[in-house]
Length: 461
Image (tube, rainbow, N blue to C red; front, side, top):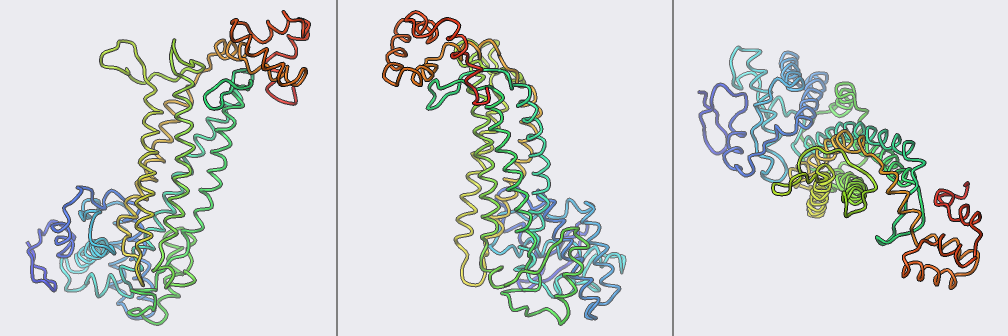
């Protein structure tokens, strides 16, 4: 055991761990969810990037010994390489502002750097506040780290979006000649092809890729150098210029300096912009999943226009029942994303005076939305979309027997006449084509051509 002290007194710390007294206090004070910041390796990596960049900047301007700076960088590298995974026990629910997150990182780096220099943990050579946190504040470190992490999450999400976009593009081609009935207000409408229907899904995801790609730009301006409230107090001359030289190099992300630090600390609308884009994505994802559920409903008393891959039994009592399990999972994910967005909205709204202190709950919900969408989209694609099969005969039957084919008669004989034909066809159980021929409105050859559903699926036909 080792003894550490802070303003509240002293505590004995297990010598096997690299974190220190402030981390232990946070762990004891906020045993809330059982979910620690270890759940967010991208955030921890981003924090380590900032600590390394700051150490190099402080070294270059002559306020941090080279030996200490090198040890801090080496410790930060270990964190970035995933070698300290069990050292971040702080609950994601904690005091506002995220001081516990920042100090957890500072203490781990300080103890590891001190160990490198002296052979033991402790702060006799490297101190978490004096050296690791030099020229910084939690208030500029945490929002900067969140933005870096968001950039990385966006890259992962884009990979998933390209996967589903590619799968849908293949289905557009595969189903281009499968004629079916469209539906508006859940009622029969005019014929389309299954390929046309899937082209709508495909186009949505193409558009989402463009939208998500633009989010990278809002992640680039950082507030490093702002320190506590935007004045830069506590940092040293030349530090700001140096850290913005190191941050892009170490992170591989082309970050820039925020134009107005006061705005950057007071307002958290950038997180809401990102969350809103994720919510928009979720709406189309949920609609696709919902549509697949309806189109595959049956198999004998539903639409049954498509068949989804069977992944597991759907009932504990009804043998042979197969549910659309994957689409149902996706819809639940989207519900969760909507809830996350509402929480983020409230947290952004509650920013007060010179700082928005609600970033712990913002990052929890924002990162969760990223993770849920990224993972579910890939699973949705692999276990469902790629295996969708068209039930061509059922699709064709619905299209040929639809009363909406009376739309053609409306163009030829007027709306009221077509209404009468549709009503009579419904009452007598006939198709529009059969009744039009019976009443000699069209010759059989004309009816075959004008009332052929595939001909009605586009002006080019």
